Length: 291
Ligand SMILES: CC(C)(COP(=O)(O)OP(=O)(O)OC[C@H]1O[C@@H](n2cnc3c(N)ncnc32)[C@H](O)[C@@H]1OP(=O)(O)O)[C@@H](O)C(=O)NCCC(=O)NCCS
Image (cartoon, rainbow, N blue to C red):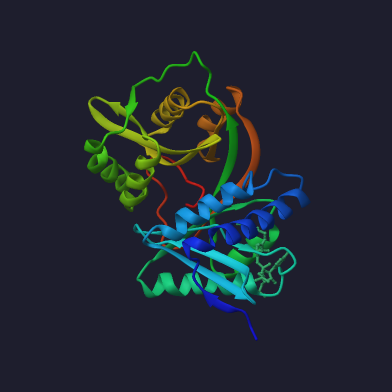
């Protein structure tokens, strides 16, 4: 019997999360990189959050009750963010990754989405080949950096915590810079830890979301320009303990040079891949781990 295609239920988070953890660890270790998820528990947490959040679609191939492959598509906002995508160790290279990705793409297109996006590690030729064959194009190179901004560096403009009163301004700014809205994603990350906002001349000039999980994972953010983006990274450092993990688009060369000169370590290079509509950002941006 061929594997059955189903969805991930929250109560399957532990078993699916373990499969995701092992799959990401095996390929990272094969290339001498740190694993995509530091622990099985962290992968399980991510899978649980995705499985229980309405609008996050999941695709799971199961055989004899055992998960073989999965993918997740975030359909809560205006473009679809993808990940994690994983095929169990020992099951790779026989079309299962393509199957869960095709299911995701078909569902998103049926639901009317015109843009699907994901992040991919540059060392990972299998995932690059899969996504490229499915019509995803590289739109940006990403530098995954880890560290902290210098303790004595102050933001140029005013940096403060986000409040609910900022939602409309942040949503409008995201639309201006990226060409689409990301309101639901901002709202959910604001429940995990307050995003940081930068104001210039009394107007919101950017925001950055974060997720605390041992280290501080900088999630998505946008800014009018790179100066405001650096203010946000400095502000996020001030608001969080431990290292920040940030994906900086390499086209934002001034910010990347500043981060590396400030002591951030370059951990990995990656690509930002898009299938369908794409508008070049009209400002500065940071993707989350998903898009
Ligand atoms: C990446 C991954 C999801 C791909 O799934 P998979 O089941 O192994 O891949 P598939 O068998 O579906 O093959 C994908 C396609 O890539 C092609 N491909 C793979 N390696 C290739 C290479 N080096 N050059 C050219 N094409 C290649 C395959 O031929 C296949 O093409 P086709 O479907 O048009 O025939 C899977 O290998 C995996 O889980 N890896 C570890 C975790 C991971 O990397 N997750 C993704 C993170 S972004």
